[in-house]
Length: 187
Image (tube, rainbow, N blue to C red; front, side, top):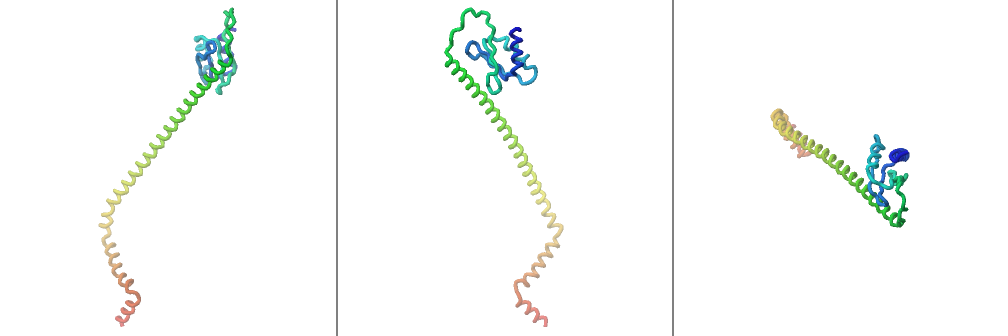
């Protein structure tokens, strides 16, 4: 099986979210694997065009699913020993920076969504307030237009109410003494 087919079958087996390409011990590129469509047909040609010594297949959580090493037929001399603590620290630093970058991207997206929602709500509130102001203006205009018409249509009702008040006021204000006086005057 050739290298391209090996990569394709390994990708299909593990279904990673990311493929990290390394040149030696250094991270060279990170490839995000599409979640839909022809996933492997999109990723494998990119991998084949780049130089790499090792591929790490990573899950969404960032855990290593599998490692593919490049076929090195020219392995005449053994690779020099590398200090393990330095590469581990470098990997941890790279992972930490990657996690911070992803967290920042998510926070930025969340903030943008919150601001968009707030702007939408403010637009709706402004529209409602504008509608209420318009309704109050219509009510005020209607009240101004109908007030003279009410006075003009029923002047007799107002005059009758005033006459009734003038008649009742002396009776209410005088109490029982006036009632007796009126009765004596009637005798």
